[in-house]
Every structure is written in C-alpha cells, then in structure tokens.
Length: 487
Ligand code: ADP
Image (cartoon, rainbow, N blue to C red; front, side):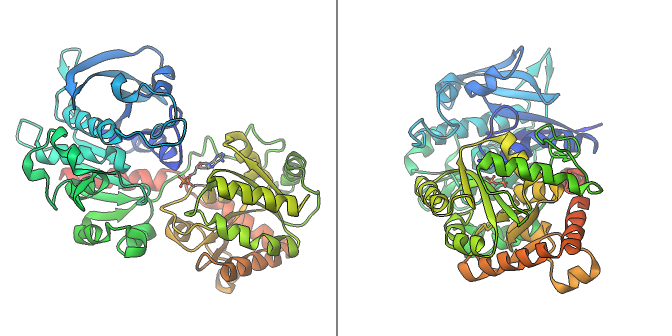
C-alpha cells in the first residue's frame, strides 16, 4: 500500500511562485512517487491557482472555516493530485500571495493561513469524502509558517478516529519568515485554551505560527544539513534556536533537489547553443549572446552572473562594495534581480560607473535566468544565510562555477577549489568565509586566477556538471523519514 501524504504549502510551481519554496513543493510529488509515496498537494485558492486549473470538482464544504465559508476543490498539479482550498473571503485578491499591490502584508494573514492549517488537519483526519469514500492521509507534511498551523490543529484536536493521531512534519525553507501576530487573534483560531502555552502556539505573548509547527510536529526538517545545525545558534535561529535545540534529534536536514527536466544545458530551449560536459566550447556562443543582451563588452575574461532576490540575506550590499575590485581584476558582471528599492538604485549607479563592465536587469525573468547560467562563467552567491539555495545548483549543472559564502546549503553543495580538492580532482567551485569585503574580494581574485588556467577551469566545470543534485537521494530521504514516523 502506498503511503498517503498530504503536502501543505502556500506556493507550488507552476501555479504560484515567489521563491525556491514553490520549486520544491512542485517537485516533491514526482520525487516521492518512485518511493511508494502518493502525495497530494493542498494550496490556497489564489486567483492564479484557480485560473491555472482546468475542471474543478468540489468535494467538501465548510460553512465556517475560521469564520468564513470555504470549499475544497480537486484538480491536478504536474499530473499529481491537488486539493485547492477555495475561500474567496481569504484568497480572492489581486497582488502577491502575502501582500497587497503596495507591498503591505495582508492584515488577516493569520486567518488566511490558519484556515489553511485547519483545513489540512480536517482533511487528513478524514473530514473529506470523495465519491462516497472517506479520503484519509497517513501523514501531513507542512511547509513554512503559512502551513505550520496544520501540526498544531492535529496536535490539539486529535483527528483520526480509529485509534490514532495523524503524524506531521514541518519543513523550514527559511527561518527568517515566522508568521507572528498579536494575542487578540487566539480566540478566533478555534483551538483549546491549553494551546496557548510555551508548548503550543504562544510565542513572546503573541501567535507564532512557525513556532507552533516546530513545537507540535512529530519531526522538523530544513533544507540542508548545515542549515539544520546553524539554526541551533542565535545568529541563524532568529529567536527559535532554543526550541530547535530542545527538539533534538527530531530536527534534520534534507537537501533540495533540482528538476533535471527544467535545468539541463543539453536540452534547454532558452539557450542559443545547448551543450554538455563534453562540448563545453559550445558555451561560448551563449556567452556572446548574453554579453550582447546585457550590453556588455565582449571579451574572453570571466563573466560573472547573479540571479537573486535583492535583499540583505543575499549579501547584495557587499556585492556592491566589491564591484570595483571585480572590474579591476578584469571581470564583468551581469545581474538579474528584484526586491529592495535602495539596492536596485545602487546597482543602477554601479552599472553607470562601469559601462560595458557591469550591467543590471531589474525584474523577474525565468528564461533569462537560464540564458545567464548557460552563458556566464561563474555565479556569485554571497548569502549571509542560505537554507539550501537553488541558483548554485543550477550553476553546477550548467558549468557556471558557483562562488559562494560557506553557509547553509551553499556549504553542503559546493566543493571549494583548495589545493587538496584540486589535487584530488574533485573541486566544483569557490567558497569563502564571512560575507564582508575582504573575504569576498579575495574569493573573486582566486576565481579569476583559476579562470586564467584554462585546463584547471575546464576540470572544475566538468566536476560541477557531474554532480547529481536531482531529487533521487532527497526523495529517498523524505520517504525514509515518513516511514520512520509511521512505525
Ligand atoms: P530564495 O528561495 O531564497 O529566493 P533560492 O536560491 O532557493 O532562493 O531560489 C530562488 C529561485 O528563484 C531560483 O529558482 C532562482 O533562479 C529564481 N530567481 C530568483 N530571482 C530571480 C529573478 N529575478 N528572475 C528569475 N528567477 C529568479
């Protein structure tokens, strides 16, 4: 019998995406299908989700789900089962999933996402019948704060009738986003009084939604082994380090994979010149096309790229500091990103200072991100913290050598080209310690030196492209964890 898992999240490709979370949630059903796990995804009924689906069938209705009427619709996502929580009072809005058009967080986010958690608990516990048959789940897998109330509802209102509670897992994709709200919302959650405690949903006198999940889930995972260790400290735990330490062996790290069907330089329709590790010379046409697209001077020196949200987390302020050095040692930079307005302005100013050497595109452009990985020589990822990171994995797959800060998933996926790794023939990139000028600029100098030794650089590219960061190993790891919790 396959294990039936309900995966609960606020984003999943191809229906709704603001970051790496959506890539991961969208990839999980296929990653687990080969391991005897039948995964159903539950998403909020945002306009983009309802629009992106074909025929929808209603299988359940709530007269009042945290005070609003709601329906449950069934559909498919990437060929796998999908449930959509259709509650127009909560989700039928223009703007981004969490904020209005002006970027202001929706004031009722506590209700929008507690309702998602409550619905997940109801569904897993067997509240939903489809074609006369009660649909039950063996386990609930909740992602980030938006889904983290599901374990709390399961814990404080045990479901599962025939002798048993439904076990749950919370996965932390980014500890920086926790979902904290004032105490006044607690009476409206429909939880028993004992839930308002240090072992429940209360956090610093308010409602902590991620905290609730971390306290109530049977297991907690995050998206790399190093980040799982880092969040035990104040610098990375962002206030929740004590709880992470207290959960002890219930906390583990499982790396994200990448979707090899989407990210393969040999068959990528975005590239003018597809290539593989045996035909690396074909990258040159992509590099020339990228230089032209960005208005950069064409030359054979190293072309650095950056694809990112423009935030403090991603170290963009330090990137700005090292730009003169990057240009001074013969590098050029093509950057694609969006986010913080002050960083955008500073990047434009830097590009104006270095015409032909630094070029910036503000916006979100999936196809361009592929062209950059296929034409750039090295991708810079100077994150202050990085739970897993996907862009360095795409860089590895494309032979666009990652230059990364040694933190989180970046530390776990890139092998630094130190003398030992070079001698052993296993280097796949460049790592540096500490996101500040000295470390980052030294890493850039080291990268330019390595690039100057063509044989060595090609060897690093080949090693990088050989890395297998598909979902194979991580799908197995999640399946093993699910089974351990069932046992
Ligand atoms: P995070 O989830 O913290 O933003 P990740 O590296 O885990 O960081 O995932 C980011 C995802 O979003 C990757 O798929 C990356 O290619 C994509 N991405 C980020 N910024 C842009 C952009 N401006 N244009 C296109 N894709 C982007």
